[in-house]
Image (cartoon, rainbow over all chains, first blue to last red; front, side, top):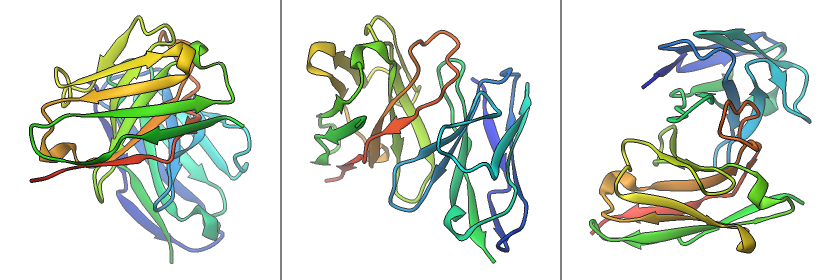
Length: 107
Length: 123
């Protein structure tokens, strides 16, 4: 099975900073990669699908890139409401494995 | 409004069984792939299972294969997860989620999630 590895596992940044989270697949998955945001006590929310397509209603400060094995989620200007844990997921075929998550906090 | 509402969670002894339900509304349920995802206390998300819109195909994580059965009743707009031989490590919040229209090269991700139902396996 394909493994998904995120880095870092946590980060702390200031409001307005550019934040980058990386997700690496153990084998190529083309662009079958999605990103979710989960706030404490809440269900996950879809942010990005097909590696780089922004889900409707998601602020444009979120963007995704990558293909094959290496993917990136970028928050161009971190806002207080972005405090959450972010997960990538391989989505092309079962098992649709998640990364272990990246917790984003405000410094 | 597109909505998913899970139910059926609770406290069960190791080795016991539980059936979760997920009631869907606001979209044509039979057209969409549905999934179960769980989250153990303080841990990350774990994909559990997925079912095609017609219920013709189902897939499971190795951790639940042979113990869990996912099904759907399209006329009732309801998704199910039958969980047998439960273990302490199955303790988690279980979410149902709406996916693509197809299991073949899906790309759109899980765009609607329920609020979750809590399963606790303990003696």
